Image 1 (cartoon, chains in turn green, cyan):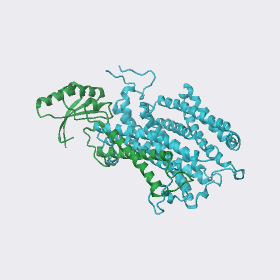
Image 2 (tube, rainbow over the protein chains, first blue to last red):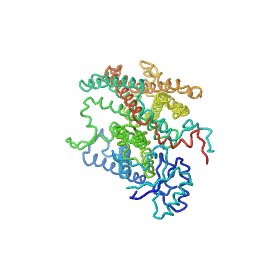
Image 3 (tube, rainbow over the protein chains, first blue to last red):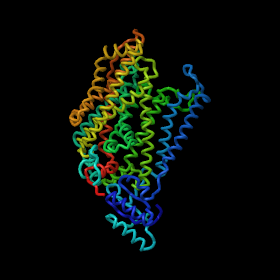
Length: 174
Length: 456
């Protein structure tokens, strides 16, 4: 989130929050972010938020891993040090399948987790900067950029309050 | 009112608010541990010391301190390795198979099953390293450019596949376990009273902010790791089975081994989970979260797997007879069903294939003491299974001149006691300092499955 003031609608119930989000979006107001104690099903679609592309990245990592491992096995057993084990062929695709499979999983899972950490900017000791400490316990918070006009701000406040929010706050985000 | 399934009991008993769920589950972290916790911890430390001394003797004197001989070259080392790996499949079976299959009842149990996995795999990993004798040379197993040519490892050997598969399994399981705890670490940090707790749990949470974007990515990485590890778990134990099946020893050289081992591993994993959760729910008063319905679900799965185990045992016996191979027939009928090792064989059959059939009856499934005893019996039965496979086939193979018996030495027993100690020690620390149930995941299933009625 960029530097701005946010209007925060605080909810105690998942269904009330989802209904409020739908009503707010009907008025063509953009939801900036939703904070939740657990992942609410399909909230990205309901609130019109960005969906992760991690699945696609994992597929690419998988293709990269399988190709690299297979090439490495070919290089190590045929080019680098061709060694005959018990009269078996130097390069045999069937006997390379298992190790390719396992190493592909190894590299794909490793790269996916690294990507997950990088996109979330997670690192040890990073401050959580929770929008509200209660979001990790029992509270749902819907954040909307505070508009410049007072009428629009009042409309958002009213939409929150009439749709089940227990409180509406404002917070300046650095 | 929301529709309540007549088939499924609620996952969480009672009308609990989200806050109450947080409080109930994270209570053990705030409280001073009970006397029983300290007693178990001290016993596990003593066991670890015994294991440490046994390892010291193994490393300084050599494998000669074990009860192995020229015929039985794999003894308790490989038996316990396979046994621990099997138990280590619990986390994957619970967390990952049930996650991929969208079974929400996993949420109360997955965290502890994953913890078991980590500690069990560490115990398992110790055995091959100890069995190398010169543990300081264990890096030889890794493929790295070296001064010997470079001479690579044999990429087509199941023993090397084992190293890679188990290494990957440890990494994937540990990462999955840790990522799952990140949301709960922030929750613990927010309610922590001391600066030290806030610092530790804050550091562990890595900056989790509970935004939908983070949750979305979190769910994605869970499914990615879950999907990959589900395939991995099948391959890990298949590879362990291939360690045996690719040899020419009678009783080992069979194609049934990989699926048989995978099913056996899941069987022992589930029974160990059962043993643990029965203790855990009682010790930490979590009966509302780990309900009798959860126990019931696990016992039903055990009946099913037990039947597969029974069929596998019968298939092995039938095929050895049907093959007409004298060595196979001898191994199965003269050295397993009858002979020196017939008692462990029949105990294996009784504990793994017969006893769990009691779970067909609801009366037995609801009797927690009985369920606990049977879960322990299955663990013992699965240990006997590995003993039977390893020792009977090796003790009497093709050459009668090589026939011998095998008795483990005190050092081998000591290492096993040490690994048991480490497993219990790890679990004690987990139960004391980490969220033993996935708080955020339980909250996500509460509304739809608890006794709390929902207005639409």
